[in-house]
Image (cartoon, rainbow, N blue to C red; front, side):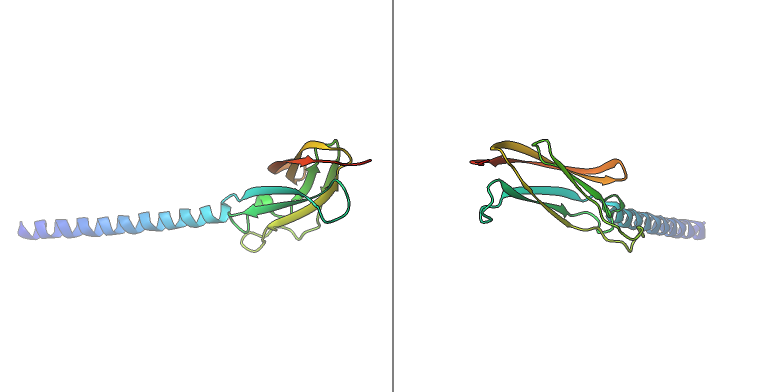
Length: 148
């Protein structure tokens, strides 16, 4: 009977250790998968270009912050700029096909636009994959003293 009581706790200890190893391995795997698929955030800045000599010229920059460097949704997106003055512009790149763990997203995008009227405008940038919007950022800009 004393052998049974010594064996029983030892087998329970082994079972607990084995269970902890499985739980630890699952936690590590989930964390690794989350890092590979963590969605980056978008930060759009639109500023007047004061030193250009051109009234109404603005420069816009989008920064993709945080998240995974190989986040597939943001790999090689088409950009659609809506400038808030009933004008649009697009930019597309020709990229190699996406390869998990190998392909990296671009972190910075830039554009410029000239406004021909004064006012407050909402600039919207859409990141697109085919016809689907995968990311959206917006910013307001105030344009003063534009001459025609």
